[in-house]
Length: 268
Length: 300
Image (cartoon, rainbow over all chains, first blue to last red):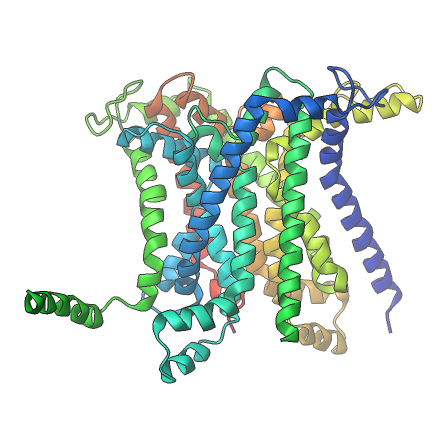
């Protein structure tokens, strides 16, 4: 049934997609190579590989602090943003209320906003309030940007949710808390789970907001940037690669858990 | 005592029942409070600083238009940063639309069971901070880097000098903002009903005509969101110029940053930021007002 031009189009689209994907992962590979090079300076083709910079990175006390900061920020951001975004998504997609259209647009504004400018604006605001920037203010900054994203992710799930299920449970005499726990949460679980993954990973990799709002505290992306601008060491690509690999591992584990839970549910 | 407690506890419960806050507003309120304190209030602070005396911290205590006068002064070259940022953002939008369309189309129509995997591959870079990815390109393009070294190894004279040029900045922007064009576009293309395309074909429409008259208009909301998003992010780009561009071009976000940090001229930085925000959010509000988000995100 397929015409020749369709086959050609399909071929073109596949080649193009593959090409763009290679381009997307190429710099990540270059970083991995540089981190595994022996010696202070990177040159290609790599003459000698070694794990010395990985070792040094893992041993560095300074970097341990960075990892702790990044993890702590990402954990708090995940917990808070999933909680806020769950209700935010119900208001976005489930309930019909007067201000909904306006609310839907308002929630998109922080996403449709240049992050460096948002970071600087928050810095000004914290200063006006007399708050010293630290990792705690970075948490707030991340939330401003990540809560709307997670709200959208969960809202997509809410759209496919049939509100009559909640009504049926209420008619049968279930309490509000019981309905939330036994009806709403299980149905929205896939959206909440992907929202949580998004929140953690976006916070983990965020650079512009952390740069301006973390004050003296540093996160992994912030530290990497300061070393890129001045004082390159192969620890920069090494730590960058480690951070990328941990994000990939988390995404993979998270995805697998999601698939497993869905399978078990379908069997039950 | 027990009686007193009883009566004091009863009325609040009753008012909660009769209070006319809709469940929608109640669920929205935590997010609204966050946005009010974390987004609106900072913007108001920026606006207030923009009218404060230059190089001072007299926010809310002085009112002057001097900062704006300084920006619009023809002697001042800060407007070139605005022009560069907006031109680069515009080019990013146009080029990314062309780059992303075939991929978004393929994800919806051609990749079949691979579509999910391909989208994960495109999502993942979002979780790696942009400076790490951009620095990877520095390692690729730099002298004795991957490209230069590979070409020399193959016996050529060596790689071209692309690093630290305006072209490298544009390339970095295309690279970083691709997912922001791709995914909204893909959502848009998913909105095209297949039967409509089939019907048009059965009625004898050519491939080009189907694309122009059926597919493109129906996918437009998603494409518009993608374009808006990439334009806004592109207009505020700074890392690309710092890492790949060697500051061969100063973007507006960088001017704002310099005013806030080295120059310690918060009022000037705020005035610049305010102009950028006005351009960006004016555009965002205009485009968003044209769109029905319920339909795009999948309410039936």
